[in-house]
Length: 167
Image (cartoon, rainbow, N blue to C red; front, side, top):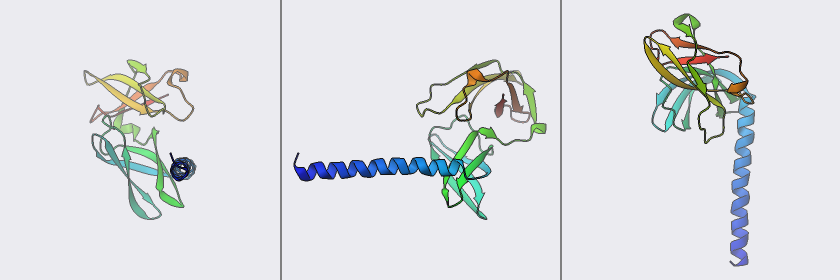
């Protein structure tokens, strides 16, 4: 490689590292920012759209991961950076739901899924309406499902596919 190619490669690497570090700071600002409720509006095979209100405007954020066990209409706490409402964190470990519309049951089985993205999740199975269901739910940062006390599952009485585990 010529000196020019080495310098160009080094500059490109520095830009990529800068973008990666910038994204980390952006997520940190969002995590510590303003909280609101995000509603899952569009769920595809590889994308998920979350709608929320920030600074008096309806906004949407598209997340790109497989989100197949989620359903339109579910709500989660969403944090965003007030200086940049495009920087968001959906707190999948903090569902928002009315417990009066849910039935409590015990989980049949808990385990941790294989998660290539490195975040903590728990897979839980439960029985409702004579059927067995399985769901995945995020865990708060630094929390491991094995450290949790006995859990309860709350499933939506009208649609038992939707459920949340509470530790």
